[in-house]
Structure formats: structure tokens, C-alpha cells
Length: 271
Ligand code: SF4
Image (cartoon, rainbow, N blue to C red):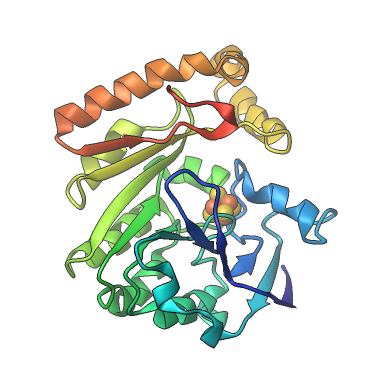
């Protein structure tokens, strides 16, 4: 793992993600190294063109007192969009924890999203926010599959256990079922299991990008060869996601949980 320290002008920036006004990315890169990650495009802009995604981390140095909580009142602020705020080295550097501590008092809608059980560490801070939602990203309960596609993230059960303990403290929680590998991800089981913790579910489609297509297709061709043709089709024909969206809506209705479908990556939206 290549670890470097870099100076960051501003640790919180404006966002073009639908529904999100600001994002805080405490690191460049992400140690989780998910094979489908679309944040890998960051390599081009951050002097990491020759590096392997998941094997480098730049720890941002920033001035804490430049973060003014009131600046974000009434806005939505996500931690994080192109890294995981609880990437393993957060244990050592605590950038995420310091940002959160500094933001206490804001009237922003804070959203935290991670694939790490480490998120539980900051429950004491989450409790001090007026408006905060803490979520885990989870697309399967299958440990073997998770180990292949998200090699250094916490295993699914660990993420859910951390989320349960956070929810037990009265903090709003959600599960982001993302990215859905159609006909592979056991998202119905995720709803069934996680609905004992939260009733807020959000869903995102698999986002095919030039850099991740070879890795995704290698997985499908080797482990699910009967789906190879379907994956080649759904990559080209975004309308095939509609039937996935419809079954998700039906399942959520039957389970009595809230359902937000965020199938907007790769230029596709249901509308
Ligand atoms: S945890 Fe998120 S940011 Fe990190 S590699 Fe996985 S998908 Fe990318």
C-alpha cells in the first residue's frame, strides 16, 4: 500500500450527484479496492495514473477551522463520494472523525455511507447531529462473493452488525444496495435481513465503465458463465434495468420498507 500525505485546499466540495449539495472526501483513493468501483477515474486527476486502485491512499491534510458548520445549513452533505470515509487507515489518521467533529452544530442533512464496520466508532459523534443518516453499502450477504468483489471491505454481516448497534442508539440508518449485479446480487435476502434494522433502502445499478468492464466480465464469465450474454446485453441496453427496478419496487412494497431507486449512473435513469 502506497501511502502519502497531500495538502487539500478544501476538504468539502460542491457535488453534482443528484440530491447531494456537498461532498467530503477525506482521502484520495480507497483501500477497499472494489472491482466495480467507478471512483477509479480519480486516478487520472490525482497523479495516480500508473497505480492500482485500492493500493494507494493519499491522506489529505487540511485546516479544520476552515470547515464552518453553518455554511451547510439546509444543504445535503455526503461522506463520501470517491473514497470510503472508513477506509482501513482511517483508524490511524482519523480524517473522517475530525471532519465530523468539526461539523457538529450544522443544520445540514448529513449522509454517511460506508462498507466498513469501523463506522460504529463514530456513533458518539453521530448522536450529536440534528439531522444525520448513517448507511452501509451492501449488495450481497454472500461472504465469498463479497470477498471477490470488495476484497478489503468489511464482510456483509460485520457491516450489518455495526449498523444495528448504531440504530440501537436511535440514529437514523439506511442500507444502500449497491451496486446491483443483476441476477447475481441476493438483494431480496438483503432486504429480508436488514429490514430488522432499518426500513430505509436505496438501490443503485451496476455502473459499467471502461476501466471496470474487464474485471466485471471476467467475474461473470468465470463464475456465472450462463449470465455472460445477459451481462453483455444489459451493458448496452439500459432499458433492461427497468425489469430489475420493477421487481425491487414490488419486493419493497411486500416487505413494507421505503424504496429509493437511484439507477442514474452510466447515463441511465428510469425516467
Ligand atoms: S468502498 Fe466505495 S470508494 Fe472504496 S473501492 Fe469500494 S466502491 Fe470504491
